[in-house]
Length: 278
Image 1 (cartoon, rainbow, N blue to C red):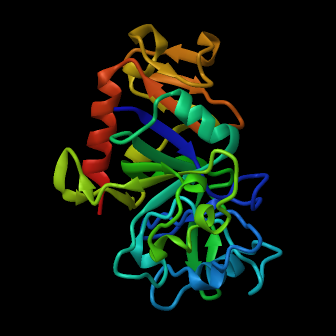
Image 2 (tube, rainbow, N blue to C red):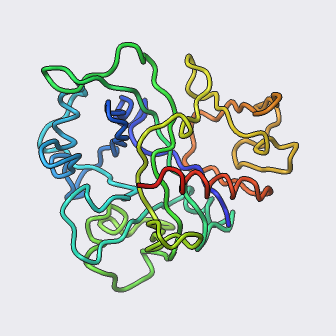
């Protein structure tokens, strides 16, 4: 079983703003804009009354209007928009990023933990606003997916209609275009969904330095001296071992960081999901 930390949602170059943490702890990962996907921000719902487009407007994120479509990936929650009965959670990847996952033998049984740049919000008479006390935001793990099925999208002739809204099926003719379909239930706990979104708590924080979100705090066993390897982070100079934790100066770009070499990381990922799954 591989554990993959996957960076997703708005960032400084795609979208330009952090995703919001609502006052009740709801983590709303804002998917990046993409043309011609047929999935609009106005169609994605936080609750019965508030759409993603509404929230984007309240937060002052510009320019966004009714014409904007989005790359909804990973697609982890059935409640986000109208679905068919046979909907499944999906994460897609293509190009060099998919090739990287293949080269690291990421397959059925692997666990994706999705993280992104988030900032706390407050509720005002005009709606939600970014919290002025949380100026820079932080990296937060917001969701998960355990792979139940993996296949090359560009090599299959037919697939369920419920997959059509996913951007990697909408634009299927991409090099190394790969779908990771979630298990219906976790293989290690059949009472918990195979994919989902978390509510915020401190255990989901990656960022350690309030002035630099890329400085992460992780359990001691993530340090390379314990045999752990995280792709794109093999340089020992990026790591610092403390008394009961370690810190990592994470790379500024890159999408999927595959972790192996230490079974404690797998146990950590499983416990994180079980403690935070809704």
